[in-house]
Image 1 (cartoon, rainbow, N blue to C red):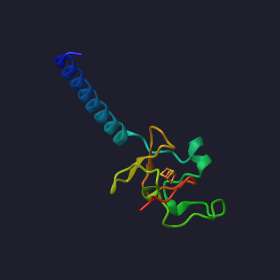
Image 2: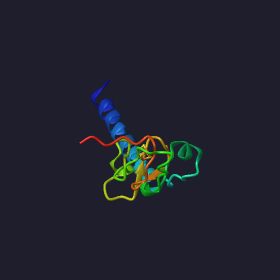
Image 3: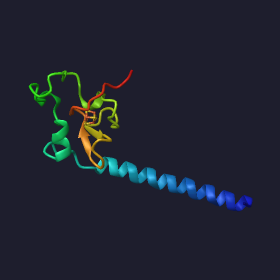
Image 4: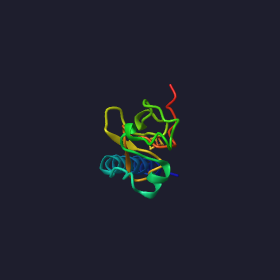
Length: 106
Ligand code: SF4
């Protein structure tokens, strides 16, 4: 590969990555919130407000457990919602909870 071809290829990769990052950011900020009544949400006992968890059904739930301190939560601090890999294309509430909760390390 010639130097100019290599340079052009690298520029294309960098430009493509920037576009993908921008698109991902837009998708994250515009993704709709998970509806508690969606099949996946209902199956996992997801609620948008951790204080509304059915304690008869989920007796191990603790008040301090919420999406924002879950290992799977990918939202930014101080935002009211963010992505969770269990709900692709949607956002979970930072104050939400589901039965797949795993305490964030650290
Ligand atoms: S896995 Fe974690 S971040 Fe995702 S919905 Fe359940 S509690 Fe929230």
